Length: 96
Image (cartoon, rainbow, N blue to C red; front, side, top):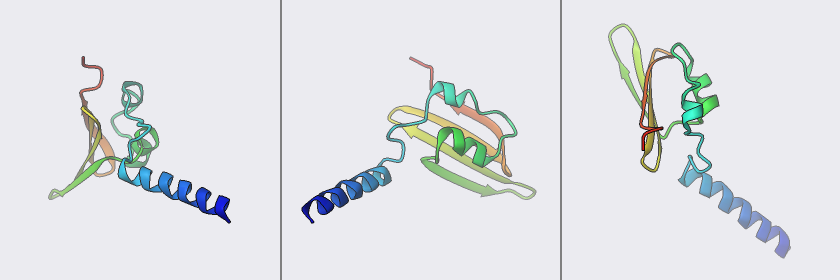
């Protein structure tokens, strides 16, 4: 019983640890960022970079604008979608 309790506690710690910092083991690298191309879907971006740290959505008159912000310490990437397609991107990755 004690081993099961310890294993459960370790699993719970791992799960809650992931919830607190979704970018631990961050996919926010210059190589991954460089794979992001105009026209990609949100799902394609998330397959490469993982879930965003922050999401902001604005309903414009004829389209929806969504901004995904990825943060890992001082590193960041911003991916802007028009409807469900990448329109633009910005980052400070690769700067010294």
